[in-house]
Image (cartoon, rainbow, N blue to C red; front, side):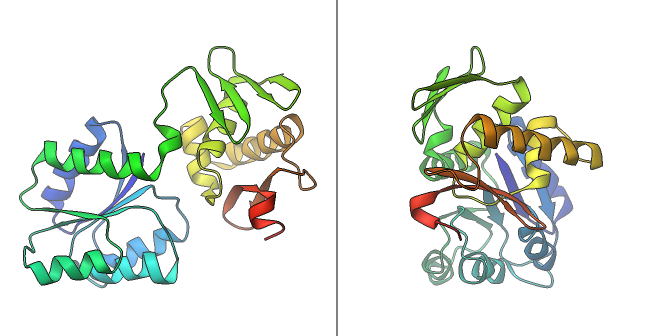
Length: 235
C-alpha cells in the first residue's frame, strides 16, 4: 500500500518509514502540511499517517482538507504525542479513523494500520490465485480474465494493470501511481505505454466509453477511474 506520512522530525520520519517499508508498504514523507495537501491533488494515497504539530498546516488542518475539501474516504491515523482526551476526540469526530501515541510501538502501529487497510480495502485482502471482482474472474496462474461468456488471456502487464484498477474501482488513480504499480517507475515512455495498455484493456475487457456495465474513464491531467455505469453514469 502507498502511505503518506506527515512528520517534521527527520529521525522519527525515517524510523517510521523503515517500519512501514519492512512491512511491504511504500511511503512518501512530508515535513509540512502544505506539501501534503499539494500531493493529495496529484497522488493516490491509500492511507494517511499524520503528526499533529507540523509547519505551515497542522495535521488537523490536513485532516479537514482530506475529509471536507477533497471528500476522500481513505483512512487517516494520527501519530501524535498528544494524549489529551479532548484533542483525540476532536480528531476522531473530524474524520480520523484511529491514532497512535509517541513513542512509536512498532507492532501496535503496524497492527492498527493493517486493521484500517483490511476494513477499507477488502478487495485487496484475498491472496488466492483466483479473484472475483465486479463480475470478472481473474486467474493469476495464466493471466486470464473471464466475464459474461468471454475469456481472454492478457499479458503480464495488462493483467497487473487490470487487476489493480478493479481492486481500486470507483477510485481516481493517478498516472504516476499506475506506472509505479505496474512498471515500477515513471517517465514519458512508460506514460505512453500506460495509455496503450489502457486502450487494449478497454477493448479486451469491455470497458469502453459505450460499455453497459463498467467503463475505464480518463481523468484529464490526473489518471483513470474504473466506474460502474449505473452508479456514476457519465460523471
